[in-house]
Amino acid sequence: MARKSKPKNSPASRAKQPFNKGFSTISVHAGEDRLRYADSITTPIVQTSTFAFKDSREIEAYTKHGKERFEYGRYGGPTEQVAERRLAALVNAEDCVVFGSGMSAITTTILALVKSRDHIVITDDAYKKTLEFCSSYLQRFGVACSIVPFGDYEAIEKAIRPNTRFIFSESPTNPYLNIFDLERLLEIAKKHKVLTMIDATFGTPYNQRPLEWGVDLELHSCTKYLGGHNDILAGAVLGRSELVQEIRALHKAIGGVIDPHCCYLLLRGLKTFPLRMKAHNETAMAVARYLEKHPRIRRVYYPGLESHPHHGIAQRQMTGFGGVVTFDLKGTLKTAKRFLDSLKLCYIAPSLGGVETLITHPATVSYYDYTRKERYALGITDTLIRLAVGVEDKEDIIADLDQALRKSASA
Ligand SMILES: Cc1ncc(COP(=O)(O)O)c(C=O)c1O
Image 1 (cartoon, rainbow, N blue to C red):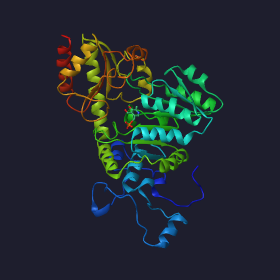
Image 2 (image 1 turned 45 degrees about the vertical axis):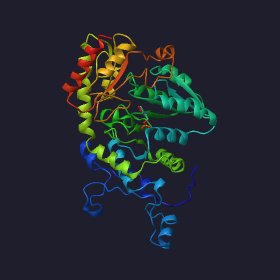
Image 3 (image 1 turned 60 degrees about the vertical axis):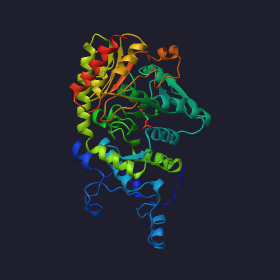
Image 4 (image 1 turned 180 degrees about the vertical axis):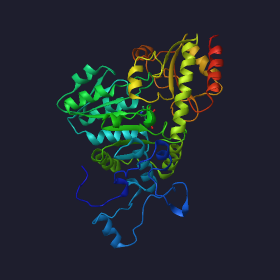
């Protein structure tokens, strides 16, 4: 536990100021002072690892009398502060901490909330590295973890013990874009007085608002849609001040910080976030409908399609369905490889949420070290493809998929 007696008051630890404007205005302006260094329109990159005190009086004003200022880079700086305030405003959260990656946000948040002999519940569809962290690394510190099947709300409730600290899940999930019913989650969590955390990376604050449904903490890999340009790694946790402060305190010790230049790129990406999301949602829907009708496709998974098992929940909980479309090709591993090798516009790369369309083949990328039997048990077939649409013209993306599908037919 961080010492509570110290009155040092870094501005980065203040809760958000309300910014009552529309979503696009928030994306461009929230968190900034109106007048900035040298009258710059953009947020300055304050590229420094430490901050000078004018004199010993100022040290005392800061350490003893709570003067708000910055002290040392790991505890936050002006550019990071703007990013935290802007994200908090976008998500409508009391407070936010930004991190050097999504995984840093997830692991620091979890570590801040558990102690030895606690227990946590996580759904089996969570991001592979999050599952690995919870099921193996946490156990070393005496924290037990139950992995429960996604969507099995009875199993989730049964897994709760008197020492359960929180339920962690994701929505939508990777790669099948399953949607967690937040109403059911919150009913269980309230009944048993446990915290809830949702990794909402795939959903984004444009399409879904877990905190507004009553979830305690919302996490994002800002590497994806929030940054939006496939050029940074960043993460964030958002929620009530009292919870976020505990996480911020540990973050200062663990030190998985984001650097000011990266924060600037995140802020720049956020300015076009609603425009990009509108394009991602529309293009993904068009691509999903195109693929659903294609004779070389066995099945398409997109929550916006009526055929998706969680389409009803998605309609209730989301205002858009995101930019990821997963599909299963007819054929064999050879067909999938031939399809990938024939693409001319879409890049073969993991990740999602950027302006470039990326496509990945879970069987040979994320699950390359699993046996075929293990992969199939998790639903990762030889022919499963995850497409993360960018903001190129939808006709060009579809044309690229179309020509690659035609070529793959000869494999
Ligand atoms: C759902 C989800 N959560 C968290 C992460 C980790 O984020 P990062 O790569 O920024 O550490 C990822 C990465 O792909 C992800 O897909």
